[in-house]
Image (cartoon, rainbow, N blue to C red; front, side, top):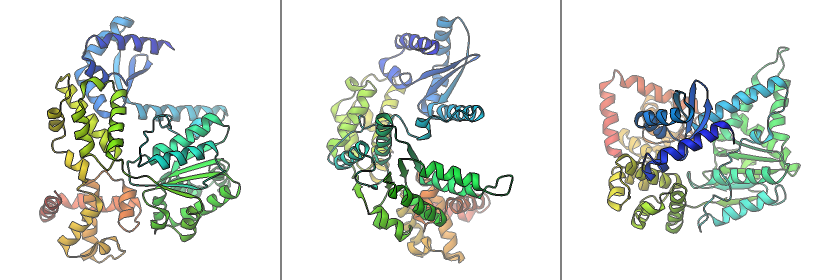
Length: 454
């Protein structure tokens, strides 16, 4: 344990005596002092922590740090993920300059926090978890490729990282986790030229990254549907790894048979191994997930069973939203200095959001239907390649609203609109944004459609 850790442990012990137990668990438990010079850089898990600590606890933090060190520091609250990325970039640059190979674990691009130990198992995901563990224990020998599919927020990415972490920790095999956007970006990088006008070095780097490995884990394969040339390259990468008996693990929102934007030869290969579906969690699993999260936050004694039942019954389709609802309730209780979280408080905290958690009213499909009805066109028209103004303009509006009213990414929206790439989606959003600045009639139209959606 270095000096920073000793100082921060001493700080945490002192802050515990100055704030409520709920306040400590919510705002301080997951913080860490990572740098101490003129600035004290403290990592925090969320933007809410960053904002609340700076606005509400800055003075008391400065006071306690000063009493421990005898020095005044400028406080700097940094998101944990952002800090890790910055440090990895610095380390990689330093290692490249010194000629030291980049650490194999970091090269795997895995999240250490996603393991089999902390994956909560229930009837809806038991088969997927067991299959993933079997692959992790015998990579390349069974269930190759392993294709995991299911709706967003059900644990596909967690399982994929868990497989990778297990293999890295128990073998010397080389593992690589990427999403399809990264694969596409790396493939497009092959267009670069060396000083001699060739791209041989970039091709060698690409092949070394994707073919000189033992396990390839690729997330959200459906987004390859917007990149035909990248599909072709992935086909050859797949064949190379498969022929060498290397493990391939793939995830998607849909089964291989439903990925109509992908080439037939790819979908055929995805069916060679084992397809595993993850289903939405049942009520028992939802409550199990909530209790596990509560125990890690040390809130177990302050949250009643009826609160857990209320959240579990109203957030049925998505683990992320289930956990998000719990986080909102805990944050609400802390902000208003409530020691015990009651059902009445939970209802108040989730007022205006619980329907969105349970029904996901403004999903892309619903936006497409409402916009199509408003303009008297079909949803197929919106997804088509037709460029006549009577279809193109409603399409721009539907894409714009999909970005504004959902938390979907540009690539995912593009997939929902006939496989358009992310730059086309961005262009549509910018077009509507600019026109809204001067077109009052369009403002009224957007308002009318938004009211229909709500």
